[in-house]
Amino acid sequence: MKRFLRAAWQWIDDRVGFTDNVLPLLTHTVPRDARWWYVFGSATLTAFLVQVVSGVCLAMSYVPGGDEAYQSLVYITEQAPFGSILRGMHAYGASAMVTLVVIHLAQVYLHGTYKFPREMNWMTGVVLLFVVLGMAFTGQLLRWDANGVWSVMVATEMAARAPLIGPLLSEFLLGGETVGGSTLTRFFVYHVFIMPGVIFAGVGLHLYLLFRHGVSEMPNVDQPVDPATYKAQYEARLKATGVPFWPNAMWRDVVFSTFVVAMIFGAAVVFGPPSLDAAPDPASIDANPMPDWYFWWYFALLSLLPSAFEIWFILGVPILGFLALFCLPLLSNRGHRAPSKRPWAVGIVIASVASFLVLTVYGYREPWSPDFSVSKLPPEVVGATAGPVYEGAQLVHAKGCLYCHAIEGFGGHRGPDLSNIGRQLTREDLIIRINNGGYNMPSYAASVNSEQLTQIVDFLLTRGARDEQEKESR
Ligand code: HEC
Image (cartoon, rainbow, N blue to C red; front, side, top):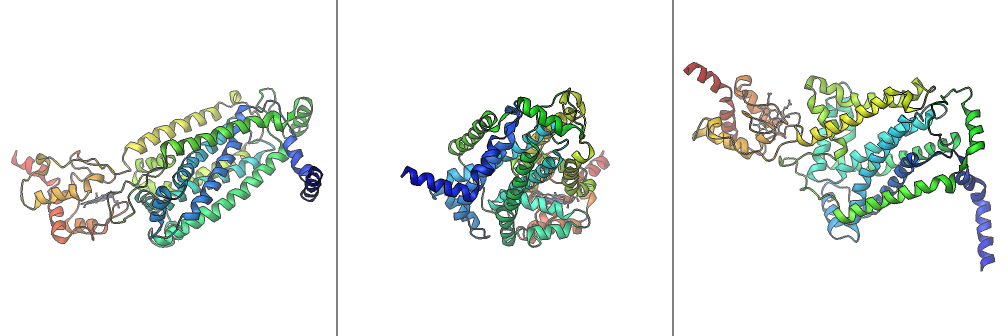
């Protein structure tokens, strides 16, 4: 038996070339100082594998169709064997992967590892980073609950306003003019076929380049990178002090990756999957269009900009961000790698982390998402206790206008303040606006009848007029 197994192994080994090709990769010499700093890349890969395995399992029961998607998720969460844990792992795994890939990027940037000869390692990594964010974004819609649908609706409406290509782009992304069943099918294809395909290919290239140029050493103040001499010096130092990748360096990757998987699994078991929102209903204004946390900063940024700039930022920020990162090693690929000699690099990382945190907190609290805890307008603000103006004020609360609009300081800040709207818009303008909705405002044509509409408009027309009356009466 033993002899048979050995013969079988030799046959396989001879045909696939494990000993000849794979073993040398595992045991190739790496710098001895490749320590805990270096575990984030492999951990990102591990998190990706968790996503692949849990994602494939979810896809076995998930139905990417407008009518059934939400139901199939309810089934997965509540009935399918291990469904709840798998959904949890896929959700926390996504958070883990985004976090790890960004830490990996920051570490590689701080240590100047993108410099010669590893420029393309960096560039493939930047492409992978953006595809990973694309995965996170498309995944939200597949949840097909109110949250996921609204987030994508808000984002693509933003994209649609980009100059020139906006409308075409959003129509291509959505598979139609608005978010609907065909959007879901399209996002499913991005999320399950196209983007994972790109990630697999990109990771393959990224790893190939890693082996081709070797793991970088820790930056050393006495060893600035000079492309003319770097490779020879690197080889010489490896010969003198290098250690085999497995086991001397790789055990740390294994330990950290195991820890990451344990955390993802633990979170899925302890906290369960994120609860499903209500089923999507485009006419419902009770949705809180909150994307996943790693995008809050971006929405916060957009909500802070004056709307005239917004259209340039919506696509401008991601495109410029991508180009800046992608081209970085082409602009500077030599000189010092040590952070102590690159104060700008350290400053940029600190500033980025700080702005991320501030914008995230801001995006969580304010104002791009509607505020659902608004109370009714007090009588002194309404200015009437009966009649159409009074009824209109009640409707402005009941129909959710105050979630997004503030009147005299009462209400949310998603949309413009309406305290003086009576002086700014005419009756016709108001009717059109409420019926048709607008950018980030739902259309109310189907959910208010003409009597209610008149009352709302009557009430709104008193806004701002009151000040003048008061002034006159004084
Ligand atoms: C989900 C958030 C949201 C809800 C709910 C909402 N709006 Fe809006 N509203 C907006 C946004 C955002 C704008 C700005 C739209 C734009 O510029 O295209 C806006 C614009 C307006 C305007 C034009 C303001 C101006 O200064 O030009 C009026 C009037 C208005 N809304 C009234 C209402 C009324 C009445 C309701 C309730 C029946 C309502 N809105 C519900 C988000 C909302």
